[in-house]
Length: 176
Ligand SMILES: Nc1nc2c([nH]c(=O)n2[C@H]2C[C@H](O)[C@@H](COP(=O)(O)OP(=O)(O)OP(=O)(O)O)O2)c(=O)[nH]1
Image (cartoon, rainbow, N blue to C red):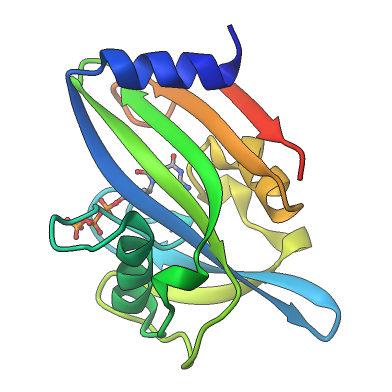
């Protein structure tokens, strides 16, 4: 079974699915590629660098609009859902938790405003060669490099109940 089939089967058999967004803003800075990460200041994933995102709300017209809303709320910049490029799907499970997290992953390059700190996130630009993987979710090092190389990713990471150790994962990288 491919990773993509494994993910589809997990989502089909899940009793509770919660939908989230995760978006990476990237720019070319004098010929050097950079990605905006945010230090999560509170809640789930606090103390880790991450892209921007959160729960999809019933009031969001589309999932891409939810991703844009979260980026605006967390980094004080304006981005539009129509500029969100679909970069794939990540599924997370945690031992002992019935719900499956379905994370819709995006990349965006168009924005206006200057990223500034909010109650939830402290944003900072990172060169691709200096991404702080040791201070990020432990799955990110498996798929973020492929995403930043321009590929789409479909993966599932099964964490222990401590939300730290991955006991199983599958990942497909779709060459672009
Ligand atoms: N890079 C990465 N991101 C992850 C992982 N797991 C995980 O939930 N995320 C992302 C998905 C979401 O963008 C974010 C979790 O959403 P959240 O709890 O902050 O949602 P929210 O802002 O709506 O929550 P709230 O605090 O406002 O209630 O973390 C992971 O393993 N790696």
